[in-house]
Image (tube, rainbow, N blue to C red; front, side, top):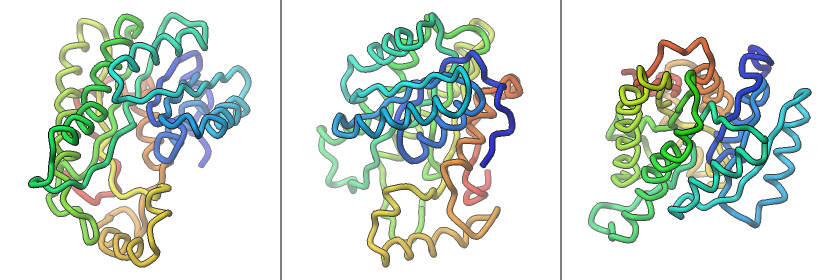
Length: 269
């Protein structure tokens, strides 16, 4: 889908965690299409060639667009500060305008099976990492800066759908992120001129869904698509990216502390 504008974010610097695949890749592309320089964080060093190739692809979208791929494991407490420093150095800038906390660890562990190790793994990646990334970037975020956290419609409904088991840890982590979103809106609003919003994502076509056995995939689709008000289909990364790009723009200056639904009306709030 073509971007609404190729210049709305010109000169802006963005960090997108999980930015080289699936929803994150769609967000990175849309921000680049609108003129932003994008630092994409990915986890697996084995995919470095693919990540670097995607960065070059984004740079080919327009004159002056810069993109870089940074390998970092978000469960490592040292990663957020390093991501910020590598972003500043790569683009030779002193500011970070947009942070998109997209990367997350999915988890379907039943309550009785949750261990302290599993609890730490999910919370470190899904809650601590976004918090520490914002903390590390804060001295470099100017007025007009944007914090955008990706959440899930799972925080709004108990029954996700057929074929999908309960996920207490994952849901708890996303509710925590929505809480941070609201607090940051107040904490960084008048004092720093930064907006903070979350995007509640529904059922989206991703590599994870594509890799499922056909029968399971069809079961999940059939159980969820009937609940989508907007159209009889799953969402796409671009559906989410358009919402994120708007929240990153000047046009969203009066939107803060909100969790914006980008789930096709699967859950209506």
